[in-house]
Length: 394
Image 1: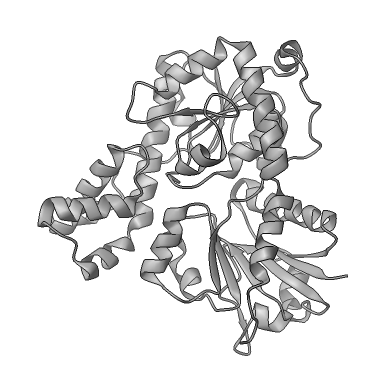
Image 2: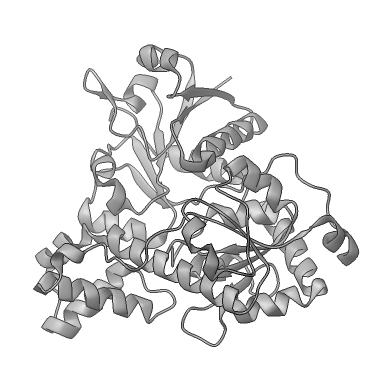
């Protein structure tokens, strides 16, 4: 039986570790033997390079491992199979790991604009680049809510949001204040914020044209290294704006995540449940009617939270992305809101919360769609198909 080797490392809230566990379960369903190497285990770390024997079909890691070498050989060469690194951050935040890519590696990303970033900054390194969001995580799927009454009775959390508080006031490029670079980054931020789905790379081009009348390729590439800071600033600002809008509307949101304690006075209609782990989140999803997703500024991509929520039978309310618009239908299997529109998060939330029938219909359709198309089994099949075109040691 062919093996798929999975690497697990450290993870905030435990999410990436659970991703690997769920992907390993999917490997079994596809007829492969999963071998999970936990890098938090001292025994694994000590004997690591001796654990790649067997008939291997694939190595799968998230963010980590692509830069590891044994006597000059990549993990793919040692194992004799392609290595897929699934990046779950903007590649600008993982530059050394992306730069270490080899032709026997597949790099996957959460957003199409991330692929364009890699093609611009580090072309030709990996064997393949692909847009493959993580699959939906679910443990012991809840019963299907066959009726509106079942949906409402089983789910006592009206609306759920999970995520860390991030400072939205202090600019991440403050050291450039008052300089040409600072003015350009300020303009990039403003342009991106004025659009629903503009990646920071496109906003940077627009800012350069607006200020300088054109795009200098070298300056553009040098500033692309700051893409993550711009994207994170946009995300933290919009996350805050969305939650403040819901608080002002009196929405009954249950909030989990690090760092919110000192800000709770602003969210009087919210119920704060503490930090929460990913395992706790998966259980809470089964009790939730609406899950709020802010898409980490993945304007051309997807977040795993959406799929986990749908598999747990909840309706999803998310900001728009071109990926969601392509793969879902707003108002049918997902509810989407826009940032620059009267179609705001508070308006959409109110529409759903006051219509149990609509909540139930969106939840049911979303669950059906994602169980068929967005499981870890689906994702592993996609990656294995790409791996067929990768030659190791060529």
